[in-house]
Structures are given as structure tokens and as C-alpha cells.
Amino acid sequence: MRYPEDQFNAGHIPADLLGQLPPGTDPKQIVIVRAAPRNYTGPILLTVTITGGIALIILMIALILHVAAAATVAVLSATGGVGLTLKRSSHRSK
Image (tube, rainbow, N blue to C red; front, side, top):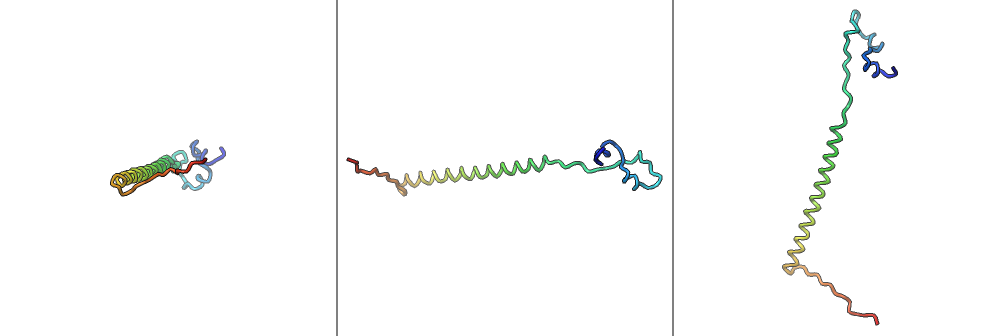
């Protein structure tokens, strides 16, 4: 076994921990409690959800601005407030 984690997983108590036990303690009845390894699923899903939400909000704002601009141009051109005239040049090359 190369690493202390391998010793813990196999149920062995490392020698440095045996030295810390009070005299008369049975090493076979010792339970070593360790913290669970970190789980990254929650933070990753939270990041993806936030990113997707921000992208959806930006897309909705762009869509609303587009519809509002098109409606404004339609209303102004129908009421005569805005006019657009396209002129073709009348000179012809001879």
C-alpha cells in the first residue's frame, strides 16, 4: 500500500494513529471517521443553470426590443410621421 487512503480503505490503522491511542484500547474496535470526498455535481449544475438563465434573459430582451422597434416603425410610417423615399438616379450612361 502506497498511500494512507489505501490503508484506511483496507481497514488498517496506520502506525502513527496507533501511537495516539490510550493504553489498553483494543485496536480492532477503533472506527476511523473521515470526511466524504467533495461532490461537484451541485456546483456544476448551478453554474449551467445560471448561464442558461442569463442567456435566455438576454435573448428575450433582444426579442422584445426587436418587436418594439418594428411596431414603432410601423406605427410611425402608417401615421405619416416617418417617411422613407428611395430615388433611383435618372442619368443613364450613353
